[in-house]
Image (cartoon, rainbow, N blue to C red; front, side, top):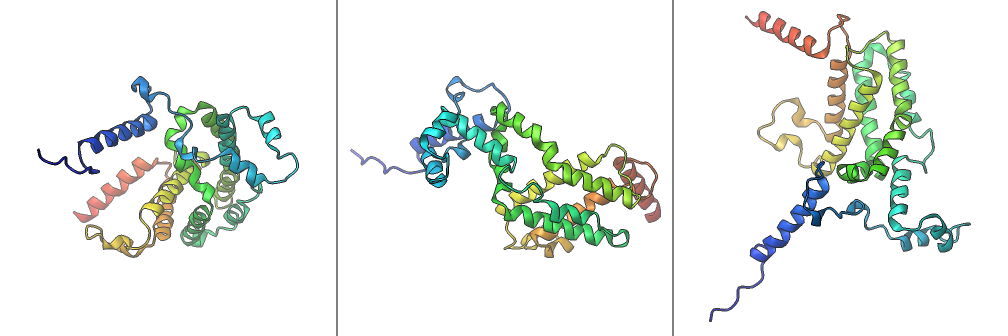
Length: 271
C-alpha cells in the first residue's frame, strides 16, 4: 500500500478549508442578504473581535467609576459595548474638537497667485496628518461590513456632517474670498466628500504600495509621476481635482462639458 500523502496547504482538504474561509469573507463583504443560512450569523465585524473586555478594564485601571461592576451596569453584552466603542472612536469623541484647526485655518490664507502650490502643500500635510493618526484607518478596517450593522452605520452617518463642517466652512470662505465658483453640480459639501474619499484611497494605497519601490519601477508607467512620492501623488491628484471642480474660466459649464470643449479645441488646433 502506498503511503498516505503528507498533509499540504495546497491539497484537497486544504482547499476545502480555504474555500470555506473565502465564502465567509464574501458573506461579510456582500451588500446582499442572499447568502446561505449558515453564513448569516456573522457577528460584529471581526476586525474588532480582538478587543477583550478584560483588556479594557485593565487599561482603565483604578480610574474613578472604572470598576467591572460599573462596566456591567452600562453594557450587558460585549457586542453592545463594542458597538458604542466603535461609534465613539469614529466620532473622534476622545480628541480635541479643534484638532483640525491647524489645517482648516490655512484655508483662510490661500493666495490666488500661488493657489496651485498652496493647495498641493496643504493636501500633502492633510495626508501626512491622516497617516499619523491610527484612528484614520478605522473606517477602512470596518467600512466594508458596516452595512451589516445598521446602528453603527446610522450613528456614523448622523455625525458625518458635524465632523466635516470645519472643512466645508473653510471651502466656502476660500471661494468667497477669492471670488471663485465651483462648476454646476458641485457644492462645498460634495467637494469635501470627494476629497475625503481620495484620502481614504491613498491611506489604503500607502499601506499596500509604500514609496519603496517607487511608482516609476513599473515599466508601463511613464512621465513625471515616476518620481512622485506617495504624498506627492496625492497632492497632485488633489490639485488636478480642484482644477476640474473650479469654474476657472467663468463659463458656467459643468466638468463634462468643459472637458469636451477643451478636447475639441485641442483637436482643432492639432489639425
